[in-house]
Image (tube, rainbow over all chains, first blue to last red):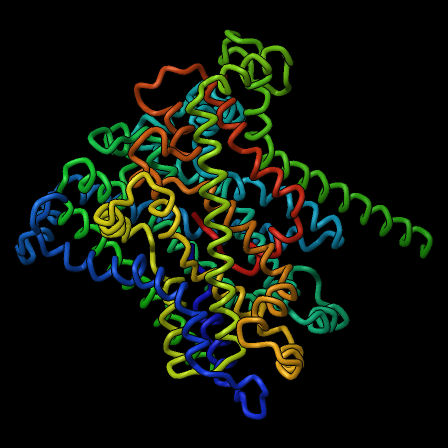
Length: 321
Length: 286
């Protein structure tokens, strides 16, 4: 779960500052707090509290039952030298570097393609392409476990036409992350397309028509009118894809038939990712401090990359102004 | 010459359209074939080796019925299905209740710290929830809520996405509507309950369906909170059919998966426009 950050909060802020003067809706703030309280209560207990509890836990040694002991940064030292944890973060970086560009490019090109159809046809194609995204992840994993079986799986049989074939997508550590990318792209391409398509439809039609009247062909219209206008939504979709891939769990966990105690990430730990390693450290080895520490490192990594993205955007904008 | 030019351009459009549609059909097939394949594996004769046929069409209705009854005769599967109906429906209703009340306030009232509270709530949109699964599970365990409805459902009811979506929706309702009701003597809560909620019906239905679909697919959270087999949701139950050490034939695994997809597919077909529009305005991911 993650949504447009910049636009949403920007728009929201603009709205929230709008004056209520002259309104007959003035009412005691007590009423407002009363109606807010259910949401705020669950939010405080199950979102805010866990963040602080997780930060505190990362500095403690705790088996989940006894009294937690403060041990400073020892958990972070332990995970920094743990080969499985390092492998999990290494896999993550590889996966993110492969998946995020593919997600953005496939979403954008599908949206530009669907845009060439009449509204009714486009709605129909969009509905079908979004179906894989609507399917529950555990079901997607069940299907693709068999689709990707070497030699006999349908995917492997079809790709053998192109000279691929007989690839151990889920059992050879070399091919496991590309295999995951195949499944994730099948699942999320339609979703990113729908987001890009919404951005495309938000471009004033006059601008596109004006380009046409000036004699622009399709490629010129895309290059000079559509793409520059889509830059903000492309940024949001990139952030969105980053958030999703950083916390990846369900698909690699199920595709590698992982368990809490052993076997996380399948053959050679080829599909081991940080959230999986954190969950296994907690519920498998009862090292809740280390489990929380992995969560904190992942959170810091996400904050770092997001800040980098926003910084890069600010720099680019300044140059264009 | 002009005649020739016109015909040629008509021909060019025709060919372009054909190529475009062929490409569209290929894309749709890529999206549909894995799901179609699952269906075909269910409706095939038991024991026919998966490896020998790519299963491009269903081959046996009787085989399918046998598979379905084999899965449904496992009482725990039916229980998990009903559990998921209970969990997902409760989640969707609570999200609607909590988020709509909060959205009504943020959209139409002024009170101290309004902007700050809204900003803190929207921060939840940016939080990778998988990162806090360990501390949240420990909190729920210390409340004694493992394997309970409230333990499985409550932590996912503070949906920042629903709050944002519904606040935008409530804003689009003209304030005059509320003011008129106030003049007629309706109180603060009555305006929310009798005016705001009915008027926001479409937004509520969209959010309700999206939350139901998300909750139905939810896997990581119930995996660590529903430790007892009788509390399993469908996601954990179906995953158990293909976990390491499980020895179910592929046809049975696919049958369990197919049954588990039914509510989602029904919602998607019935409320397609709402779901696609809702997704377009958001960014829902697991």
